Image (tube, rainbow, N blue to C red; front, top):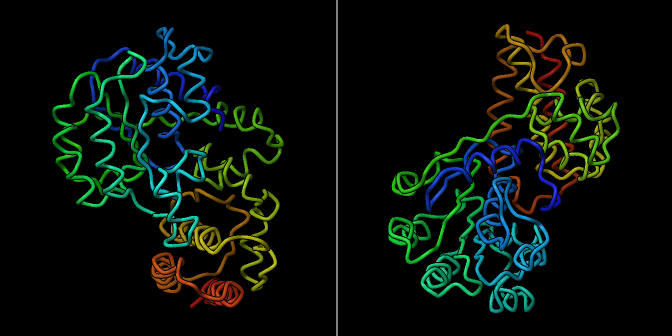
Length: 333
């Protein structure tokens, strides 16, 4: 997503939060609602040379420095995997270690990076507009990392502000949550989400299908499409699983396959409980799976999610997942 053109619901929340005072914000909610986008919009506005009630101007030297990831008064704390994905540069030592294959990029926020951010917060602002520490996803701080920022978060030196963004606030230390002003992300309505997805190049016929596949979360729907998955494959997925057809998952990652099967299982369990399916249209769902088989399948998918990053053979793993899905969906006892 472009930093310069936030979705309308992100722009509205930016205006709302800029009108309030506070040095530490915690933006929370499920994935796909724009926590990172909102956190970055706030950081841009706080550091902008010509801000207004709408946010950053988008054209000053400060805004440009953020666009090219070189702002001296912005410290971004993320897992190294996320920083690389979003285009933020790693520290020199971290980049050198990874380039020399001494280690892989970290999947959690390292305590060394947090200590550097604490030191950053104590330095004088380079541009005179204060300093900002952006943490995303904040739940990726372990206890050591989180404890390293507690005192600074409670009593920030000078003119530093913190914005923490999370998709799992319950995983944060209570002491972290208590030191921040909380903001729960707003859910955009269907029409606004579809219009935004179409403005990002998604076909009008595909946008509602992929938005439903993402559980109504527009940023997740966009990532769905950008990963190479499509609306046609999603609509065909339930019947393909009944037949044990692995071709519907061509070029999907193990994480995406498990996520899709979990959503299918969720919708079938919801139907068993008399609720409406969330991710698929009712007519797309197979008719005969039993509650017992679905419950057991759901537990097995949860176990698979915990081990999906292990170095399994991808082809064999896919065949095993699809075979298990076929068994669960054709067990009508």
